[in-house]
Amino acid sequence: MNWENIYKLALTWVKEAGERIRSSFDQTLNIQTKSNANDLVTNMDKEIEQFFIGKIRESFPDHKILGEEGFGDELKDLEGIAWMIDPIDGTMNFIHQQRNFAISLGIYENGIGRIGIIYDVVHDELYHAFKGKGAYLNDKVLPALSETNIQESIIALNATWVMKNHRIDHNLLIPLVRDARGTRSYGTAALEMIYVATGRVDAYISMRLSPWDFAGGAVIVEELGGIVTNLRGEKLEFLNKDSLLVAKPGLHQTILKDYLKEGKW
Ligand code: IPD
Ligand code: CA
Ligand code: CA
Image (cartoon, rainbow, N blue to C red):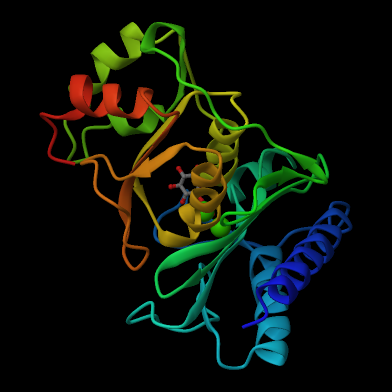
């Protein structure tokens, strides 16, 4: 398998998709709802996913594709090469703010992340990593992550988890929020993972995400020495929804051991 070729093409396609999104900004979006009134999808989410699928099928007909909007394959296993695509992560931000969203792409071989690409379209910031070959912001090498403690850390998490209809015991998060230096919520899992990768935040916690939300980010964060697991500290499976804890080394262990261990996540 010519991985260099896959990497190069994937980067080109992500940039091209970003250009399509940017040039859609002055057009009226067609907005629809999915599972509930706040679960939004636009014509651009669908168009961008179909754009990627067309390109991948043409160049790599034997690769599998998992896309959020359902135009790809239904993945039963991760054998072979699988592309995991979130055409627009942060659709609510895309609609309301025209910023704070990203294209997210992970390419996996037999369940192992080889390539991660996240494109902050508005800032023209392309984050990418090839496993074992370093992680980059555009052409600039990103430095490895260093350890930090909870008192000096900023943690990204989403306040909607305190709603009563969520099964989780959100009270367990109170000590974590109290002990951290600060919390942030950006509404885009892909960029929140990138913020951990770049040290803008120190950890990111989510109760329920899908493989396309974290597939690209996991490769980039791990390439920089960050730790990516679910909230039980287990390796992610990439076939099902799961919770997520992404953090700098050291801090990841502290959060798991001192704050999350009693939870039924
Ligand atoms: C969502 C965003 C959001 C996260 C949601 C995701 P979408 O992705 O990443 O931050 O909290 O769980 O579904 O729907 O905008 O691609
Ligand atoms: Ca998403
Ligand atoms: Ca999406």
